[in-house]
Image (cartoon, rainbow, N blue to C red):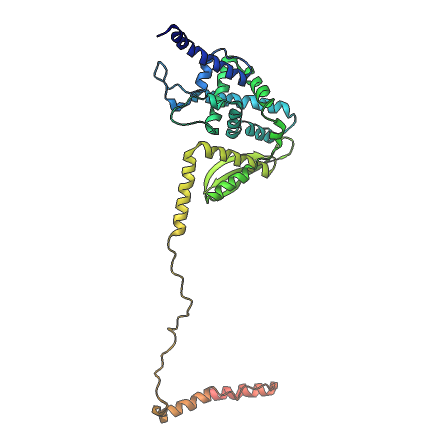
Length: 334
């Protein structure tokens, strides 16, 4: 092997390291002190790499740390930027800034996805994987340079370059509409249950709502209006649907039980014909066969007397007539 080839092979790892340093500087605005944190942040779990102690070596733990740091840093930025705004507005704004979609787009715009190390599949245009990597990157910054560096990174490198904070804050994201759309698409019954209505120290009303999906309890939300409370409950429920497969399973199991009951054969519809068993069946004879006996004739005469209508009169009777008829009837009974 020639000396030049040996030198090139020695330089190759250093060249790759230098390329990584340069790429990270373009994203972060500073050079890493401990490059190992950043290498791990860019290591997807699919590569199945382990450290000397046999433990998995990927970005999942840094993702967990970065998620917590992001919530704190972005919460502080929003709190400081929107002085006097209510808690619901601040929470909603922070949620939009640290949502999986937002972080995924950020990672893609910054070129973070191109630095990801994975195995067996491509991570390009995958907001879930790239969003996780962004959180892991924040975790690496925290370990490498501390909380203030994380705060400065998001404030200057993200908000100052990629995101307009005011546009995000005042862009209405209708979580209730999104949850309703999901439930209708999956034919899941959804309702909002009001839990309580209180007043704060200033006398302002506070509402509390909970989402119910097929009778399964979703998340709760509080707000200074019913709309705000339902929005918060919807947002939390949507996030739970994303992170808890067991929650989705419980909802669809309940839906299956409901639809099974609805599909069971119903009782036969009752007959609307009236029962005619009270009628006495008559034997029909030819008119020529009917012979009237003397006994039948007397019976008919007595029936005629019984149903004689001659005593029904519209003529008004006098008091004397009524007394006379009563006396006559009394003597007749004796």
